[in-house]
Image (cartoon, rainbow over all chains, first blue to last red; front, side):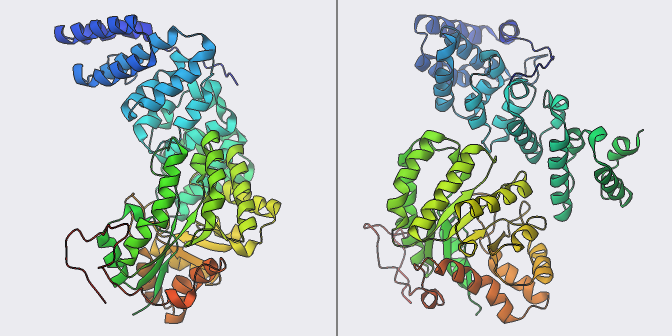
Length: 246
Length: 294
């Protein structure tokens, strides 16, 4: 599956310039040495060791204008991109899987954030699905938020699970790229089932739940049920706009 | 003192304090289902060591506090998606399912509800049939209704008798689906994410006590290994009789797992005699403290 998601993504190469501007002299020296070392030994082991060392040699700071990337995540992604870029396309999934397995959760998150850059063709779908079974919200967010990878390559069922899990982890569904294109009757029903479970348990309805719903595709009974729940004040006020217009 | 049995609790994640408190609250026995470890395992050897721990050290550790320990073994739905690993685990399962202390296949079921999960759920149900064991089925956190419906469909497809299956982690929306079958009905009373004592009591008031099972599902998460006795207290406060409390919180789970032929009801009706002088592979949880004998 390759859904066309027209969201401009600054590529890793462009971001690398931003990284250079954020490093002080000591950090720059290490970063240049690291890159040189990887040029001399462009293998998975060297990339993995240098990726881990980023945390010891670089200060963690936000990269301006880069969707929540930190300097360390960006440096790690650039190291991976270098070693992956030297491999033919068919060999890349196995290499990325190896690097993913070797990484700790912070390194896994950096890889997943960069996955759309590292694998524009969706060859690593299995790895992405495996990675999505994490219980670490930071790792899951790296896969699910601010990246078009899932929307471009996930089958419908897997994409729905990803969105539901994002809500369950309290992540902002608004940052799931391509969600609007994946809405439909099936996701509507899943969202309403989740809402019913939360209401039955006496828990607040997830704030991001309306983002899953294509309100124009609700059946008349579904719409009536939501309207009734809203009138009974069992749904937050933000639902008013979706149900009755502004 | 009332007698309780917790049929779903992950004791490898708990402390000796928990065992002491559980025994003091009247819990005479537990069942520890094999499940995932909070992060993905990468080799079958991790499963081998885990299964051996459930059958060995953990069973011994429970005995030090007078608690009967049994387990269910299987590959959990999350890791069923790692095809190579799942196939390797499936290969070793038969020799484990016949070990002393194994009372069911579990916990198996759905997580993302993928074709791989379908396959390993069905294959493990076939193993249960082959080894004449009951099955403990986990229902998913996401699309719980869809997952429960598919579980019931697979049970019918495999042809395992429904009375040999307990469907776990049920709630207000999924219990009615299971009530239409002969399967047993499992509920996890777990802080914040699953059922509460009050919601459990409401279900018992609405649907009765037949085949209703309650567990704590306590694990490495923020959970409470005393949720079974606490549910007993909530039932009493809601007007349930002592016999009804004992039916739900002791007889039902024991009767279900006793179908394995590996769990003696008379034996688990009283705590194990405690003799903390005993060791297991020359190891003890005492760490130099004075052994209790009673």
